[in-house]
Image 1 (tube, helix red, strand yellow):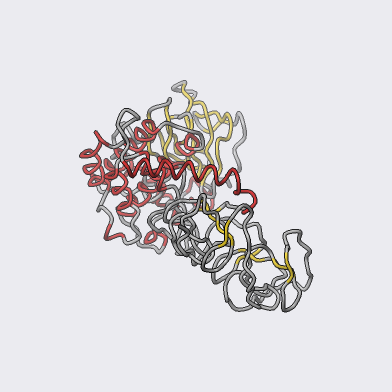
Image 2: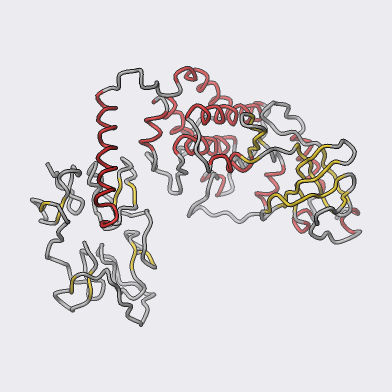
Length: 435
């Protein structure tokens, strides 16, 4: 352990506290690895961002911090945020950066034009390509590590330091892992891991949606992506977020080279170009979806999205009514307390069985019966309450034989349940072609 750390146990910094030549003004952000402060450099007379890692994470890693900071100093690019200072001061390890306005993550929370999103994506790509050209991995590429200066300049920060931050986390190969590539979550990072995160940032910039694990193409929001950017850029992003790292570009320099070849046509042309028949069909479909949600979205609780076509669905649907894709496992939102382990649909705490699939009985069943105004019918076998479009009784597992109607809908020729022929191409309950 370094002598600088032994002299005192660091405490949280306070407003107006002095730390060498820096005077703390206020806290900007706090994470599991470090706290970021706005401070005044009293020597240079400029404000800076101070990143102060947690003391217990610095302990024993002083030489590693110094090495990684020196590694990051090799990078000199307009889209890479330089380190102004990195040293131990009064028992703290302090890293000083130029002070930006906000993070790219903050900016992505509000609306932006497709042209501005493309400008941000190009700068993100330039920064990462510059690092990869020098064989430097970042390993924590995410919108929060890109800092905006003014409205146009994006700069990537935390090179080198992110490796140490990641070594303090516990990662898993399942669940939502944000921008971390699958092989990186399993402890095998490479330059391709940065490419994966780059692809996810680009996807979210153009669609507002972040694909979550397990990553399947097409993810939610793909219709918006295809309507915004050229098919060649769609394909480039698809390759970047391949689960199999061998199918991704080897590094960001190759992604940048591919992007430069298509940059002139990256965005979809404006309204001056006559839309193709497929584009007119897509536009008409969006009009139908909007009207469907206005008329029936609340009644049917259509809060999910089809992974294939991005059309609105409900957790009670077995098939996408817009494209006919089988919904074997539901991954959308649910209003119920728990989820079926087999099909992902929600179930109430007092249900013994899933009301949608023939899964085994649940083990964590509440002994208390909860009333619910959503029960609209009684089971013919046990008399238990049934919610609309239940396929099985959640109490006795008896199959529900009587079809479920839909307000203002017709009856499916196959299963006799209700379908909305004015909107749907397929029956949502049996998959039969609706017309």
